[in-house]
Image 1 (tube, rainbow, N blue to C red):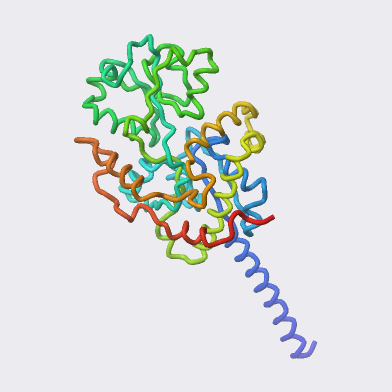
Image 2: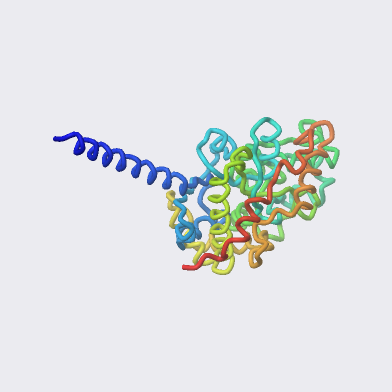
Length: 344
């Protein structure tokens, strides 16, 4: 083999390696991992619908949706590099931010809180003043912050004025009379209580939203330093656009969305009827689902949540106001400029 042939072969091999590397880099640029806060259910229908309908693919994205569960912390997952974006409640996100995890909200799909405290009338609870001396079920793992803030506002000290039961993700404490009241979501556990045979007339339901102690739930969060990367920003803008299209479709087609969610349930316990009912309840929390403002974090809602979290008396959820550092409209604004919804 002459010298020229040798050079040509080396050049061709180098070109192939370079081409393979560029394809790998391109594929990596298109990959997005979303970590959910809980197991597959209509609470996350918009993301599953976006994947099933091909909206992510239309944007050139390869999206992996990782289900959550009782032992999964979205904050820990993203802090460890296991996700690009996570679904989390703002109290948990801001508390984690204060502890050193630089989370930033880039979109807020749920505009209203679905969190409830559900009590049996037979327990003697008819108003918040009746909580004193009672056992109240509370979820932990970041979900306890709104509850403790509310109790502080009422002037109740856990362990003294009320007994806090660390509630599992079920409604057994209420059904078995282990607690006067338990935590529930309007789209999930409330209906589990009804399905167990308890009549709505036998319950007293307190809505965090109506009690004025609601905080924002189910927002999308990324690690702040990543927002300095233009390629990451572009990818997240496409992700938001496709996700919002998924949510818009899910709200308008609850039964189809329910079927898509059920198909993702590996346990086989989910049913279309239950998930469709859940989807209809969730639609009430997404006030902007049918408008171009879907997913927009309104500053007033953010500031209200921060105020609630700061007003916990001697033990507030957060001790310093994160100000505008806790959220960014940059990605949402970029997504808004892209064609929406995506064309098939």
